[in-house]
Image (cartoon, rainbow, N blue to C red; front, top):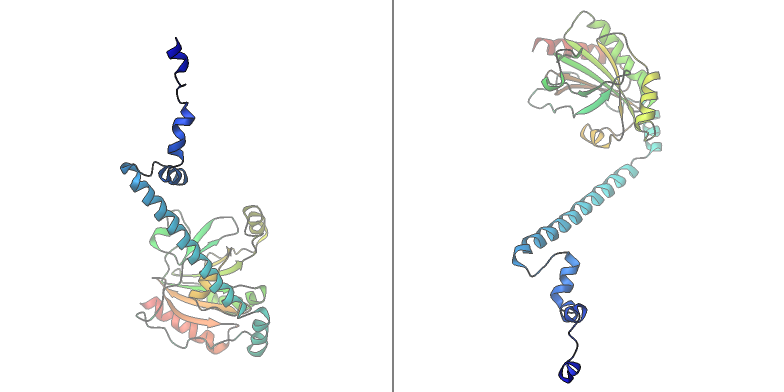
Length: 268
């Protein structure tokens, strides 16, 4: 009996675990959330560390990209566009006089657009975008007119209306007048639907009035678009390559060049 009374009480679970909790391995394990000294879990630790490093790298690249964009946007402000527009009336460069050779032509960048009925389409049109029930076709030549501001919509019409009059009987051509809506409010789903309900539309199957919502910085860079107050006109072949380009309002000479180049594309 005395022997039992003098016997020390057994260690509790906390007392037994105390030396282990103070070890470096357990502390490190608590940080990474796994048994770090277990050989079967070492690959998980390396994977998690690799994921963290990759995430940091992606974030860094995104930050640097955004810094470069901000610097680029600030270097060319609204007042610079106005000054240039007043000087040249939107004619920042002369239109092409002849077709750009197919070997030198660049592809028009992918651009998602919406019709007034809410349906969408990706320009330039390819085989994957055309279904049997779709009114869209892969035309022999397509004229795409871009307007970033309301001031340039009449410029686009100075090209599109004479263009349609010249090729009204040709079923192999298409015209897309694209208006960009960059406001984040109007680009939200609710206001986007309301906007399209009252948006301008066309009953002419050859003339497609469409709208593109959201940020378009990347497409502007690819097409080297700087001044947003003027209009940009692109004549694409059936492969979506830019074969002719115009700016601002059309002149009689430039319209003659456009119609001539369009006729050549229809023969290719």
